[in-house]
Every structure is written in C-alpha cells, then in structure tokens.
Image 1: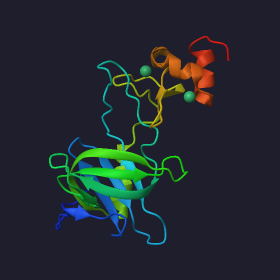
Image 2: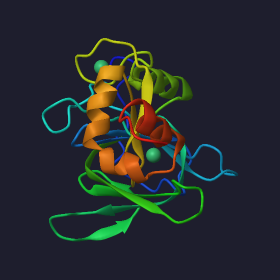
Image 3: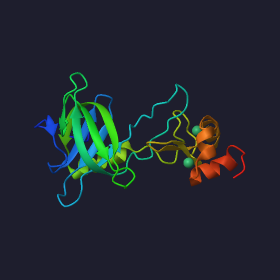
Length: 204
Ligand SMILES: [Zn+2]
Ligand SMILES: [Zn+2]
C-alpha cells in the first residue's frame, strides 16, 4: 500500500467509540474497515472498503459487491472476540476477531459484522483515507463480473441481509437473475420489479 507511510506507533488495541481519530482496521482475510471517530460531537461511523479484486462466488461468475461497501454507516459499538479462547471484550484488538455493531437500516437495531482476526490497526490521515477510498472503488462503468469488460447496464438485487446487489452487463444480469429468481419474484423493490419484466419475462 504505497500511499500509506509506515506507522511508527503500531496500535494493538483500540476502542473506536472513545478514541478520536481516523482508523484503518485490516483483517486476516484482507478486508479493510475505515473507522471515523474524529469528531467527538458526531457518532462514530465505519466504512468497509471493497476489495479491489472482486472474487467470483460459486467458482463461476458472480461478484456481487455488497451495496453497502464504500458507504459510511453509523457504528453503534465495537468489540473483540478471541475465537480460540472465547474471551471477549470492548474495543478492537490485534489478533482477535472484530465485532462491529452497525446501524445499517437507520432504525437503531444493530446489524452485527464479525470479521476474521484483526491484523493491523493504523491511524491514517484524512488525505490517506481519501486515497484509500478512491483506490478501493471498482470501476463504476464496468460489469462487476470478473473478467467481463462490458459496461454495466442494469443494477440487480441479489441478496438480503445484508442487502447485496451488483451492476452488471445485460448478459450477466440475465444469468444472475435466473439464479436469484425466487428473490426477484417476491421482492417489491424497484430493481426487482424491473428485473421481473426485462430479464425474466415475468409480468410486473
Ligand atoms: Zn458482464
Ligand atoms: Zn429487490
């Protein structure tokens, strides 16, 4: 990660709800979360940085990027959990899984994200954070399917809880729609309404 200078003071634990700063938390699986607690007057927030390389799901084609990647979400709380010993506590700790309570739906009912063990906790500058966010974004004009270089033409709803979707070219959208036919058939969102008619040939 050439944009970030080496951190002279490695952080091994952090309570993001009380320590002000902009924090980059990297886990063993390579996922990265940016936690923003700079402003003591606003609630902490977190953003998951999508991985630059989208990973095919089912060994085939689907690289459904979670729609909530690259968005700030209110962070209600954070804890650590040692999956070997079962020990747990508040805040984050290098070597332990991170457990993040998020207000994904805006109704105060937490959605829990549990990560693989935290590898590093780094304090980053605002500028470094902006570079990170920008470089992590997939090219928005392309189909999300790995190896497909066509433009995206349609946004498809692919899973719930957490909500997931992807921008796809027409051909991959048709394939994906067949796979999640039952979801699309019963969902009332606009993406699914459109997909029923234009991709699955069903009545609206
Ligand atoms: Zn495609
Ligand atoms: Zn839907």
